[in-house]
Image (cartoon, rainbow, N blue to C red; front, side, top):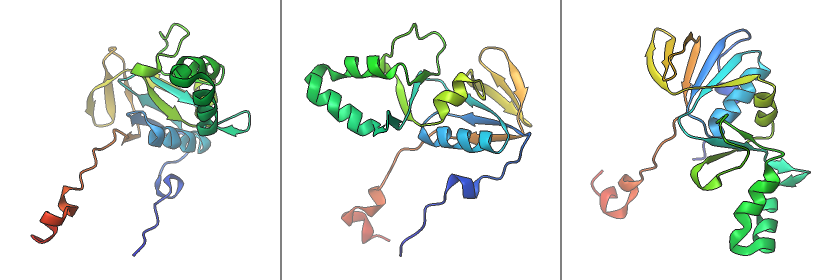
Length: 171
């Protein structure tokens, strides 16, 4: 039986004017942020890791094709060349990134609209969440703010051990 994956737009119950906090920063959080801004929400993202947001397409070409071109052209040293090229299109969550992408120690998020939303300050990056109480969120930088909606986009670790042959007979 095939299940339909629920689209973020279908499942998100939020309305214009609400303040939303996304805790964690990956592709899902990026998609949520774009949808919420489109619906008129004030969006903040709390991340504990440096994150580079790059578009899915650059100059009309898929980022995956661009990466493959750089791999062919530069071999094992393609990363430095590629990220040098991407800096014009990318945005870093860490304001103290000193103008270069350290791609080895950064999370990469692919999203076409988010770099512009961040540059235009339609989405804010906050510090790490320290405490949450009744919608009031305290961050590691001492700031605090109230949010109508808090969504945890912290990821998961896949565990399919129950599906191994030796475990199926036990069910």
